[in-house]
Amino acid sequence: MISIDLSGRTALVTGANSGLGRAIALNLAAAGARVCVNYLDDRAAAEAVVAQMQPTGGPALVIGADVSQPSQVDRMFAEVDQAFGGLDILVNNAGIDGRRELCADGDPAHWQQVMSVDLLGPYYCTRQALKRMVPRRRGVILQITSVHEFIPWAGYSAYTSAKAALSMFTKTVAQEVATQGVRVLAIAPGAVRTPINADVWGNPDSLRDLDQKIAMARPGEPDEIGRVAAFLASDLASYITGTTIAVDGGMLIYPDFSHGG
Ligand code: BGC
Image 1 (cartoon, rainbow, N blue to C red):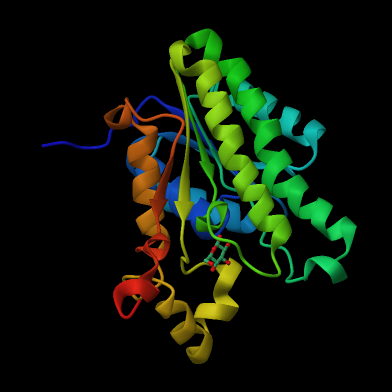
Image 2: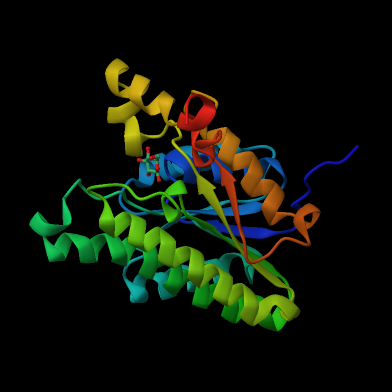
């Protein structure tokens, strides 16, 4: 029987107090990892995630930090070092869609904020992780991009630009460390039922519209991302690096072309 075994591994998941991050953290713990649950401002939710990990996971840790602030990221990694003496798995999950804003009418400060969280945050965390993983010649860095690394999305130019850039960042860094025991790769989730898009799947009209954009005609569940993350972080995925795995129910296969054309 094949099973995902992350026992003895230390993982850090950013934005792990809710949504995809929460599901990823729980799945890593279910595979036996020690998980550091990063949150921005909801400590109680992060603690609830840790409480849910027992008894499968190793000892867990809750760390507050804003990934868009390099000094806070540095402190977060120091806390991980202190608690667990190193890091084996980093999941750069924390991210925001930002508000819908057409480019011509948009606010540059808002654009910059989305970039700071969705692109610079993963950059700050990745460089800290590499400093720890490369010397030990072991590690996995998993970026959570989006189908919008590929699909344009009117009103969200900051988000789509950040995700496309994160993809190229992932490939470039993967190339830098491929011979040094560190894998760097991405998951591109489609529309998954999380708080980030609750206004869409929570409304029957917009849910119908969303379903039409998905070949499997339904949004994903957070666990469907979490399970793939646990697999990709494990040695079962030892030959996968520098690429994006779409977990999107077929959003990227142009479901409109299932008829006509
Ligand atoms: C966004 C969601 C959106 C999904 C599909 C994700 O990257 O965060 O808000 O529903 O893409 O469009």
